[in-house]
Image 1 (cartoon, rainbow, N blue to C red):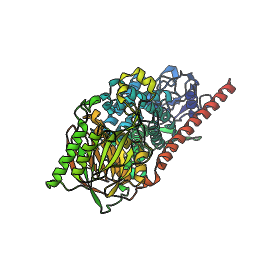
Image 2 (cartoon, rainbow, N blue to C red):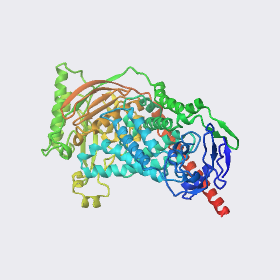
Image 3 (cartoon, helix red, strand yellow):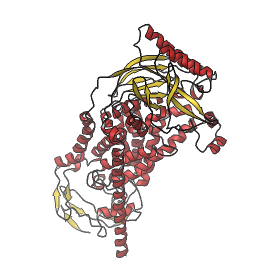
Length: 632
């Protein structure tokens, strides 16, 4: 035992290895003898080194390494175990490099933080729309996985995702609780993978940046797979109207998600920094004598700096340049006809009832214009599935639509489900002229799995009776939704597609302005789906500098300005109509011009950081293994 009053032991005390090597070896599964204990320099008495103790393979946080060896087997104090914890350029010391298991109360704290963080993230989404809860929720999730091995981080991250997605995707219950649980279970796997990778990048300097990149990578992956992906509930979609929203004009939805995740990670970094009472202790400089830490600087680096940066991130959104008005407007009539049923049977059993509802509401709009109650529209928009009968094949349906469009007297966008051959169908946005009838059209490209088509059709239909409700299998369209309608070329987007970046972007690039979203939310009326979809339209408006007009069968029909503000909207489960004056913008934002480049840059940044972190751990683990073999 060595006695050295007022001198902190250097890191290389356990078999001649450094702290980073011991941590890397533990992460690689090796048992490491640990023996360095640093006492405070301003305390009377020597700082001592006890015998080397080999600890079991465990997980924990920097503060959890409280079983470091001391004379007589006495445990190290919690403050000593926390030495080196925090952020910035230092690699976090975890219980992986220590000798004792993480206390149960600390593991319970992680679980609670993960669950509360997931619930807080949900609260940021509509209908609550407490947007500030998004970075706060992410901060709690980050804190819950910081300082643990990837394996433990993965299941904690999965738990946080379940707490978030169960309420966020509660609208899926309209289809069935089994579908709801399956969807949440599958989507949560992406968050588990994110957490595992994050556990690695937490070892790097500037880790909040790399975490933000990994968050974008995770959202991209789950927007891609399985079966076409599911981009719902991305962090950006909680920011329909917030300080983060302007980032959409620079880098689209991915940049907004990155900003939210970065802000949350910075908040976690500020909270996880070294406690102020540790600031007065002595620390050993690398390769040199001990030196007294400066309390003010320690607090600044560990807490104040990341907190200030966390506040700066959303405020910088106010500096994003925004295109101005171009002095041109178009009057658009919006029709919401309502449906007779609810849930999976929202369209009812009576043929043509949905068609008649929307035709009658269109005639009511025409009468309001003749009575001077509404301005004359330049065009009218009906919702997706506003006719439940194919007007190409059914003369009755064709005549009802023609009569209503002739009454209003302007080109009308009709939402129809039309037959393609004898076995397939298409969800179509159909331009209907008051004189010549049906003309140009756009077929929906992004189809809803198990709603418009059945993946693995033979197997699913054999095992799941409800899958037969899909009926004819839909086929996707293959071109953007730019349609000439009256005096403008609109950008047609159908329902589910508003969540997909490339579909909306290519429609705008093709000349679509304003964006017109036709949607059928009848099966999910009065759930949290319609307000979530409206928030997506708000973000798309800012992203592309385009007004967004939404026509829904049961609501929410709305008009969103190019600044992302909801100027008018309907209630749900009622018939309604209106005519709104919509600005016509043609100037493209930077996000529209550069497309997916910011997303790819952020994803590559996060992936590269994870690769570097994994390589460093592996290299140090190999080096430690070689040294242990040589010592043996």
